[in-house]
Image (cartoon, rainbow, N blue to C red; front, top):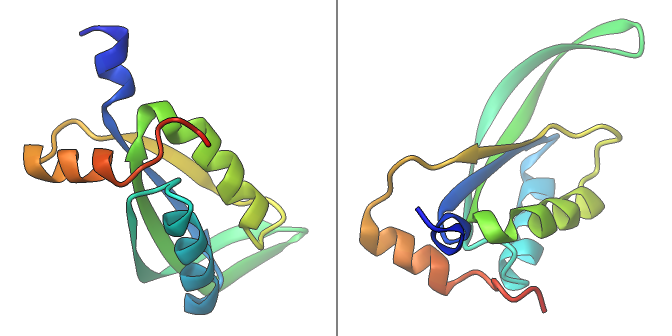
Length: 114
């Protein structure tokens, strides 16, 4: 695989936020800016230590779709909009995607960074 081909590969960026309003706000901005082609979210329950206590709360997990070549820039923008002090922002390579869907993602992401 050439370097150019790997940059054109799809990745998913996964994060969690506290509620659907934050998910919708962040997603709308990032999709309008073409950092991500789209995003889906679902309610989840998270249990984790935070500042000396065990937290058990509902969150919203968001999965964004973008290109490997855009991932760092997209992650920086997500971090700037994220309401959490220490957000989980995870990049997951997509091993296989329907070719038509992959082309659609490529056509809806600004790979030039402007």
